[in-house]
Length: 277
Image 1: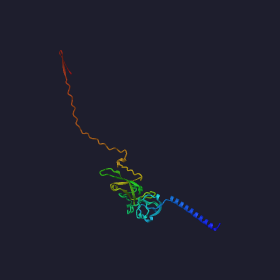
Image 2 (image 1 turned 90 degrees about the vertical axis):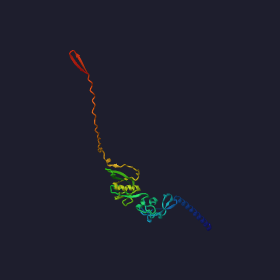
Image 3 (image 1 turned 180 degrees about the vertical axis):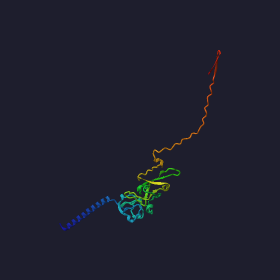
Image 4 (image 1 turned 30 degrees about the horizontal axis):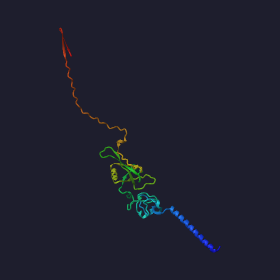
């Protein structure tokens, strides 16, 4: 076979090989695109971010993520996040979402954690009032007041607030992962303006006590106040007051008239006898 024919056959084989290689590449590329949908830039936490922290450029990063897997509200640029405060703890690799961040120009720290229309009120506590230190940020409590109402003589206990959210314990706005108790002098509660007035007055009226409750138990109880007499069983009943009956003069009984007596005289000869009837 001449060299010319061999050269032509080589070119044909090379062309066929290139065509087959291109077909295989396009087929694999289409399968890869089908299994890996189009991605989008999304901002995630580059490290653990604690509550109340002002987010810096080193706290976040941009990664590619499949669009179909993204939750609503994700950010695609760090410029809209840097400088805002975190109102919830954010773990490394988590998406940064609007509900985890304070409003723009909302600041950082405790003020950024207070929702619109709510108030943060602190109350002085000790180990007993704060349930041995287990009243920590993120828990829910009832506020009980023990005092003597105006004009009353015996102490009573009533529930002033129910299901109040603990915003901070001392100066800490986050709880430990192990849920360890925290011995602090004050507890800060997140309440409505009306409840803020009640709580402030309660601290002056008597002694307050916090009652820790399950965070999933949000049903109001509407309890009645409790008096000290309700604590004792078998106590002597209150002495009954005997009413003094007024003296009524009794009228003397009227005697019936004496019966009429009839006399009959009987004369027999010289004898006289009298018989009375």
